[in-house]
Image (cartoon, rainbow, N blue to C red; front, top):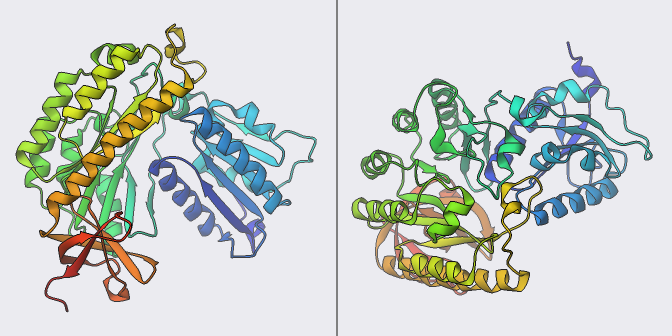
Length: 444
């Protein structure tokens, strides 16, 4: 039994790197500590506890994590510092050796945090931090998480882990095997969001299309159940593998009450030979079919696509094939990543490597394609009408929100519109061409 009196008047600071799933889990950790009496650190206050939820998707991500850990140690020198997340799971000894780190928690321990910090005993500077990390193969528990950001969206974790083991990726080692919550529990969380006044939920996970491994349910059953929750006006599906994005799911979204025409689909390479080297579970023909199917039933759908450049084995000819394929797709935006060597991955067995400057050139080539496609998509919607959910961020007396198909819209700030869905006429580009300007229809 934990005595919460030891946490009286204690404060905590939270730092999150990486994906929306990490943000959702940090939010849950914050709730756990808040219920134990630990308040969030106030501006100018030195924290008693610092929690850093890390990312390890690339070598650069690892470097950023180390930099932030050292910076936080300087800002809160006496704080009990806990590091968790993917970097902590993959390299616990390395993390524990960073000056200031007291506790390293793995994927299976991060939400049992109170059991590890009740003594709040700061390490001597010469000591390394205590490590509590379960091997990823043994991480089987699914812990629900739901967070709200300052943009009125909520992020609902529906699945965790991955069984795919693509050759370039460490996520299965960092997050364990695929597992999920039950539909009943996730619907309950969505109902709680609705009661709190939330209007939009983004479904997050590592491989959400693989939903059901733990419970014998399916992703299509999940979204059908969530679609019935009164009070939620919008759901967005975060990244979903193309081989798991079934035509049935696409058709459902097209006729859904609440699921919006917005998809994020990882392609990773537009070359079949490279997809085979990556051990991806689809080819370009299947990917093209998914894009064409979406556009057939939802012509105005926003489609974001992840692409990796410079992977081992990506010759000049293979990249050119990928470029041509991507150029031919009716997608909206590319999220371009440069390949990063990750220890322990099968990709390291592939002999052909790409020079850093070539990776950069290829990245710039695809980013230019992305800019053109994104700009053309916005242009298509000028002079049309749309429903916009407005967010609370205020800049230069302007506020913004997003349409159902993820077009950013800017209007003069009005606090009454925060977290409200309103009909808007899209007028044209704002000054820096980052959004379309709009005017309210039937102002109240």
